[in-house]
Amino acid sequence: MAVQYGGRPGHARWRLSWNDRNVRAVVYQALALAAVAAGIWYFVDNTLANLRRLGLASGFGFMDREAAFPIGEALIDYTPADTYARALLVGIVNTLYVSAIGIVIATVLGTAIGIARLSQNWLVRKMSSIYIEVVRNTPLLLQLFFWYMIFLEMLPTFREALQPVTGLYLSNSGLRFPVPAAAPGWTLLSAGALAGTVAAFLTANWARRRQEATGQQFPKLWAGIGMIVGLGGLGWLVGGAPTTFDWPKLSRFSFTGGAEISPEFIALLLGLVIYTSAFVAEIVRGGILAISQGQTEAAYALGLRRGVVLRLVILPQALRVIIPPMTSQYLNLTKNSSLAVAIGYPDLVHLANTTINQTGQAIEGIAIIMAVYLTISLSISLFMNWYNRRVALVER
Image 1 (cartoon, helix red, strand yellow):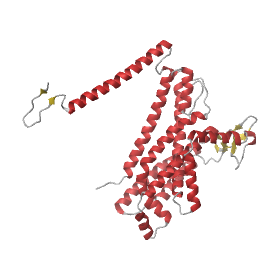
Image 2 (tube, rainbow, N blue to C red):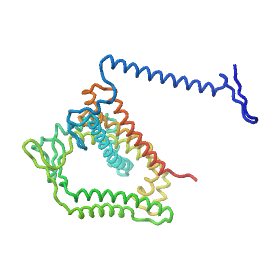
Image 3 (tube, rainbow, N blue to C red):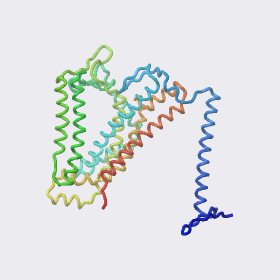
Image 4 (tube, rainbow, N blue to C red):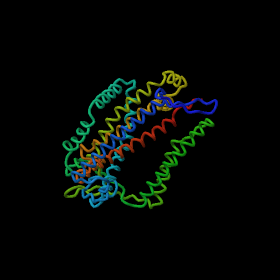
């Protein structure tokens, strides 16, 4: 039976009929939504019933309880007397720390290897190809074990630590190096350098708009370096120009003083950087090859040198091809950092596992891990999509 609704003259009449494909589409979507909601309700209700039957607590109330376990490597203040929430925050910060450094180094290293694979030098081209094929066809977890075993098995103990330069010690306990002693001048130097970086970024944007409007170039590279060094040096002078460093010293049981990077962090960073850089290199190579050969020949015809052609003509155009697949590699590196649990680096997964073992609240722990990685991945995607739109060609 078809139901018809009247309408104003000149407007199409809408019929509520099963023969109308729009009506069928709405009904099918409503049924699919109801099925999904029923499935979620079934799993949630079943899970809560099983938790009650086993006498296990649910919810996130455990986050305020005392963690009571130490963390070997924390970038923020933490003691075993802190809460589970604080312990998980340490894991999140450690994950972001290794991911951010890894993304920067992998991008630089991968770009260099990708360019080297297109080199006219036979040895450089073949070495780059071997590096890429060996690294990207070997499981990342195996590479992490390889780098970690190098530290544990091949490096000496802290008493016989290698000292390639004065004050730098390398052993199976990690890398120990001198750092500036606590003083206001060093803090002001860091603040000045940070302010100089912001000023250099703003100046570069101004110089780009000025060049687009007038065609006049501005030495933004040297200006940026001058701002960073100048403001940093000014802060150092205002703070009393300190020159004292905290040097590592060998004591009876370990090193004291200086700063230390653990072998777990070094192995994880090496594995992530070397593995990801192989994929980045192929992306960069593909982006460069996507640029028409006529662009290169036209630049050479103008008398530009090879390095200038690559920096000012090829790479800026290849960037539009490189950015979308590069985003996937950044996401992969961040998610692959969860393999840190295999070598004992206290990242989010490692600390969440410890929390689950102590509290027995696995569902909440897994939900926290998924939520954190989802947030980080979406943030990276949003930033890269914004940058991709920024460098995209605007068609008139």
